[in-house]
Structure formats: structure tokens, C-alpha cells
Image (cartoon, rainbow, N blue to C red; front, side):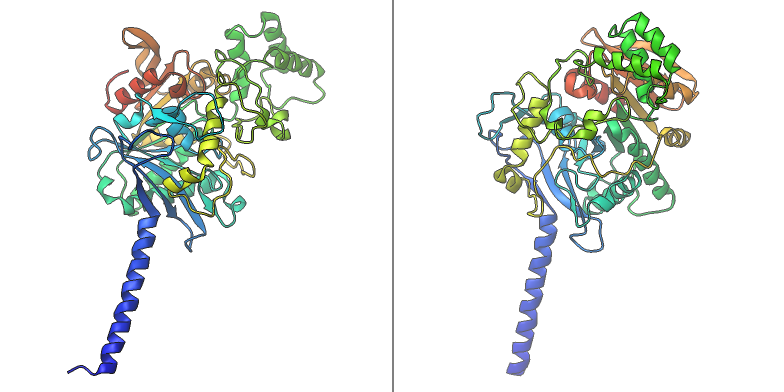
Length: 469
């Protein structure tokens, strides 16, 4: 017979153990959770959405990475898995989800102070792929850290993304056999190839879990950080500056439009005239309307910037509501939506997060001047790559992207040709011996799938299936 005191002790220990297990289960459960309803969307979501946090620090609250995971709407067990990193650096990958390639988008309607509405995007890339949209670097979106600024640099972004994906796979082992791709655009053309290289090197070193890495895709990617020097010939070719100004710029600036000698008065004069010519041109899409963005009015550094580095405006602190016809109107709606308490509750966002901004681009240490060598290394390892360009983007002109690809000096397997959608030319493409495909999206701006969703989806799904564009 067990003594009463021993029984009471056993019962107390059992109770403590039960409580600890409940706490542990709650913490695991709280780390990620399925989202079945979203405020602003009518009815249950017709796709699988999971949101959650992955901790990278030594303690739970040191470094917490927020992500959105959407299963393929086709065959999630066998379809590829892509990790998507938006540019900036420091723009939430919610941008990719809601404005470019995800299954939902904001309904463009007059803002009356109520919660913006969401509708389905028929051309979602989740029709053929599982996608993780990650908020990195720290300070981006709903991710957070105790000391944000010390964790904002190119190399820390690379290391954190690598750590994140391996930890995510530990929590989602059912996707370990899926083919894995890295996807990114804009400024993330700098860190993304290095992230792929880190993943590959980690596999070679035997890091667990092993990742079934297949390749990467980049849209209008910053690569050499010299893209601005290609803007002058690009805008001349597009008829935005005169022959005379173009020839004068060539003669007086000698091809260097970024680091201009302060004593080169002729070049500075020409650049001032050039800036005047383009002062009301939408640099992200020359076909789109030009909109004044008052969210930049308090950002003196952004106002002074011209032809220096890839910008991504915060587009979050609006003094007035943008016109509905402006692209940034959708960004305005997203900011209102993401800062609503019901939305944060539905997304399982933690209370530590302050105001959500689509982009937090300051306090970032730019350590990598070019990602060219990473492309060389990855090509040598046989990874597939798709580099695509909206051909009406001034910020990262397709001609600049072509130049660094050409510098790789790989032989051409399938030469320059149009690629078609519904019998119409959707863009042009060329394939290289190093398994790299370059493609333009005709009439698209800086974020090509946003401007041309049908063409963007066709391009992605064909490339993913190894079908020629």
C-alpha cells in the first residue's frame, strides 16, 4: 500500500508535469497556426494558409521571424516549395503575397475608413507551388528582435534566412523531399544568391535537415549595384531623352553617372537636365501614371537619392490617401489592413509588434557590392536559375541584367526568341548552358507579376515544370 503522503507527492508531481506539458504544447501550438478566415475576405479561405514564428536567438524573444506559408493548391505533397524574399532591403514579403504572386489581393475600391477588402488572385503562383513568404531582415513586417538594428545587414540577412529555412523544415519534415527553390526580387538580388550558396554549402557539410535544393529565380534583381549607369542608355532607347542630351551625357560623364566628380560641371549640368526630363516619370514602370508619394516627404535621404542605389519607399506613413489609380493606393490599403487589431489576431501576430510598415529600409548595412560571383558559383554546381525582367522598369533595366548575364560568358543553348501566351508575344527569352534562363515580360514594370499576372504565372509554371518558355 502507498502511504498517503507519498500519494499526495505523486499527485502534485503529476499535476506539475501536466501543467508543464500544457505550457509546452501551447508554445509549440502558438509558434505556427492555420488561418482559416481573414478579415476583409468573404468566407473561409479556399487555400491553406499558416502563419507563425521561428526563433533564431538563444532565448525565445531574441530573434523571432514571422512567415506566411501557403500550400500548393494543386498537389502540395509533390509540388515544389519556394521561399520568397521581397526586396527593400526590409520590405515585408507580404508584398509578394498580396501584390504579386499570392492567392489574395486587395480590392481596389474607395477607402471609407473601414477595413479594406480582399479578393482572390486567379494567377497565384500557389496554383503550382508551395510558398513561404518570410519577413526578413529583422524589423521587417511582423518579425522582431530585442536589438533590431544590430541584426540588419546583408550577411546577417543571409545567415538568418538560412537558419530560418532549416528550422522551418525541422518543424515541417513532410516537405523535406519536395524540390526547393529560392525566389526573390529587386534588392534581394543581392542576398538571395548568397542564401542559395549557404544552403548548398550547408548540405555539403552535412547540416541537418538536408534540403532538396534545385535552384532559384530572381525578378528585376539588383546584382552589381551599378545598374544606375545603365539607366541613361535605357531611357534614351525608350525615347525619354533626346539624342543630343544622350550624346552630351556620354561625352561629359564618360559612362559614370553614379559617382560624379563634383568639379565636372558639364556632367552635373547634363544630369540636372536629365533629372528634369524624368521628374514626372514613374521609374518603376514608365507606362504607368506618375503619382506623388507623400510618404517620402519626411525621408530626406530618399528625396536626395537619385541614381545611387535601389530604393524601396516605405509607402506606409501617408499624409493623404493616394489616388485609386496609383499603384501605391494598394500599398496604402495594405497598411490600413495590417494595422487592424482583428487582422493581427487572425494572423496570430504577437503583441510585441508595433506599427506595421510595408517597408523599413533604414539602418541597414550594405556589405555586399555585387552578387555576380555567387551566380558563378551556383552555376558551377549545376543549379537551375530563372532571371526575369519587366522590360519597362528604369530602376533595374533589363539591359543591365542582360549585361551581367552576358559577362558570365556561358554558351547559348536556345538563342533570343519571343515566348508566347495565347498566341501573343509575352516577352523574349534566351537559355544558357549553365541552366540559366533569362526572360523579359513585355510591358511589365519592376515587379513583373504584379503588372502582368497572366504572363508572370505562365512564365513561372513553365520554368518550374522544365517546359521551354
